[in-house]
Length: 260
Image (cartoon, rainbow, N blue to C red):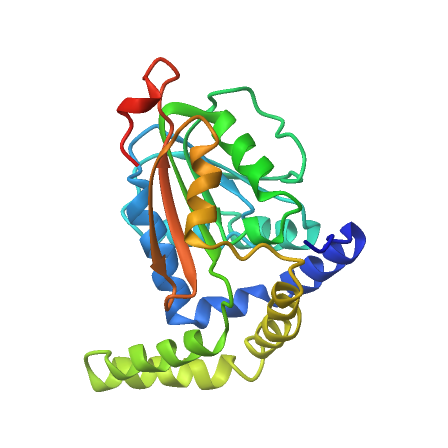
């Protein structure tokens, strides 16, 4: 497994953060956020951790849904992304953005959060196994974690095809035309840079095994080795990602009674 250079990694994600919001134009990405929202099963007064929040896209998405009254701690290690997130979500009183390095021990007590989202972050970390262990440590017994991660050999081209197929299936000529025009306007500008960074950096690092694009079995094993979680893993994001859900089982529950 290739070693991730910390300084280069920080530089890349700070650069990516300056143009990352262009990804909101992609219909598959918006669909991914919706799937995570559904899987989290948010309830009033829950405390949620968004581990690797980027530019606050998930928080902004939640503000457009019928989301119950919750509190979100959104953390990231890229100051550029956090700055954009705070600016973009400045009117959202349910979200607090702060710095955290997910490669290190989290600065939260055990059993702090009711829900945790970790959206396409694990692959870029030094040790996904360690980070998932930390996330499960700060998750309350009975709490739920939803994590997504690229599948092995994940590519950008299927996402682009899926985007245009979804445009074609939009009901109503005016809505379909509006979405197509938005794509044509955004793609060559703010959308082009994240595409190029995705293709020439993320995909290449994956091929060199510097990033952790996990097979389903490996993803499942990481959960199983951390407090015997019950899990469900299925493909999403134009079949380029795994979406994994897990419930933290109280330690008093015998392991042989858990359904995987």
